[in-house]
Amino acid sequence: MEQSTEQTTEILLCLSPVEVANLKEGINFFRNKSTGKDYILYKSKSRLRACKNVCKHQGGLFIKDIEDLAGRSVRCTKHNWKLDVSTMKYINPPESFCQDELVVEMDENNGLLLLELNPPNPWDSEPRSPEELDFGEVQITYLTHACMDLKLGDKRMVFDPWLIGPAFARGWWLLHEPPSDWLERLCQADLIYISHLHSDHLSYPTLKKLAGRRPDIPIYVGNTERPVFWNLNQSGVQLTNINVVPFGIWQQVDKNLRFMILMDGVHPEMDTCIIVEYKGHKILNTVDCTRPNGGRLPTKVALMMSDFAGGASGFPMTFSGGKFTEEWKAQFIKTERKKLLNYKAQLVKNLQPRIYCPFAGYFVESHPSDKYIKETNTKNDPNELNNLIKKNSDVITWTPRPGATLDLGRMLKDPTDSKGIIEPPEGTKIYKDSWDFEPYLEILNAAVGDEIFLHSSWIKEYFTWAGFKDYNLVVRMIETDEDFNPFPGGYDYLVDFLDLSFPKERPQREHPYEEIRSRVDVIRHVVKNGLLWDELYIGFQTRLQRDPDIYHHLFWNHFQIKLPLTPPNWRSFLTCCEQNGPGISQECKTT
Figure 1 (cartoon, one colour):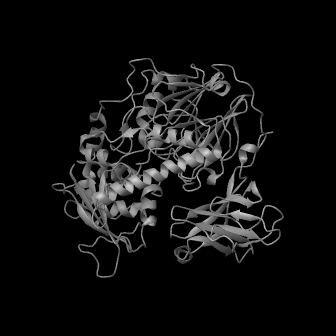
Figure 2 (cartoon, rainbow, N blue to C red):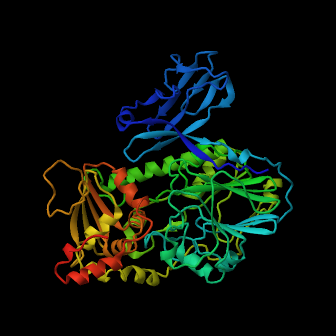
Figure 3 (cartoon, rainbow, N blue to C red):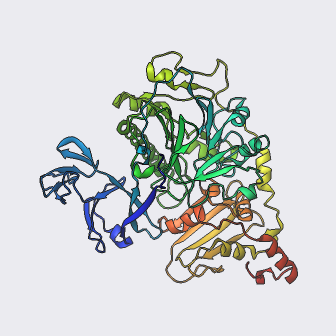
């Protein structure tokens, strides 16, 4: 019988923002006073790790290990077992156990939550022993970016189809040229998995093409807090068979094939990953998850694929002022990319898949107006990551090219088999050298002259709809041209989020301040359609300054993930403006 209980999370401990700020480097001990349970939190410069303060041997309590001068280990008071909290591995006895980790999550007020996933390893329910695969029985074909076409016996499954058009408004474009038969491949799929709502994974231009031929194709998504297809109705794409499935439960496709969707430990409200199992052979796709399944993942899977490139953020390239010199940004990017490379290599080493494939990072900022971003937003080289992996493990690596196919049965039997990976035919176009910008820019430009923006009261209408307030932050919003200079006749205004007012000057009280310059076509498209601000921020369509240099998580998290699911009621707004007549639109009531 398949597992019937959805994977859930339980909050074990809450730390206030003050307690988080006072965390010391190294080991921190905490007790939940209401439950009497104890926990250990390890802080390093790069991350936080946490576990229950319970020894796996006989349930003893850990205390600081005074013999450890590095300050990374704790000692059990019962039998002197020792745990290295920086790795969550027991060092006495050596090579014995790993401590079960808890999920560490920051809340909206910069507090901290320790969460426990239950069950922690849901893929272990009803385990299946791997059966021998025939040659050609399981084939994985890379199409573009995060899109894979999987042949699994007589079924076909596709991951994250982004095959035409831009992502994040107009900021991202495909690096690789998709195989010419990509649409036929999608139409032949038995099911599609879409990991999350970002437009390099949920591509409405791609899905519109697919829906024109197979509107009833089964699409599966995880049961995230922000629904993956929250914007389906407004997109105009006619899909009729979208299936939202609970986390941590096997979904049976046929007697040999099943899959399980898991949540991300850092962004459970939107990110997911997937395990596909065919005849006992697991394929793990962690996609963009920062900490998939809270860091607990199956080991020794047949194939693992994950992101690798970095660069999927407006920080720091779109920031200026203060420390954000070109030299600082270049050094920061170099350091962060190296950290990501080492983290992915270590993750692969720990999980020991038979085969590893870096993907979900093949995009380029190809529009001419984003030349600066393209030149500065350097990304990791998949071959560099694969070489690093091969230095530290026996894992087989695969750097995919569009149309290349991996035969899992052949590779598992003999990794040196020349037919294990079939590359695309000689002369196949690998990299795109032109992009069809115009149809997508026309959609954005159409918002610039929309009637909404003839009435300055749209500002109050929009931010009231957005629902973010009671937060001490003042933001100056400036509409700009392509070069981020003020747009002639565009809006330049202040929003005080403490009382959601729109003052002419900055208030006299002490307050943090941000200046956000946004290209007029994109910001008006986002406002008109009630879209998430990732279109602006991840799409590199803004330039930002802040004083002081503090990241306002509550503000950005709201506009990037927590905006209302339905767009502003602009029809009612315009009716109000017409009834009140020109010149007094500021008096229109918000809907």
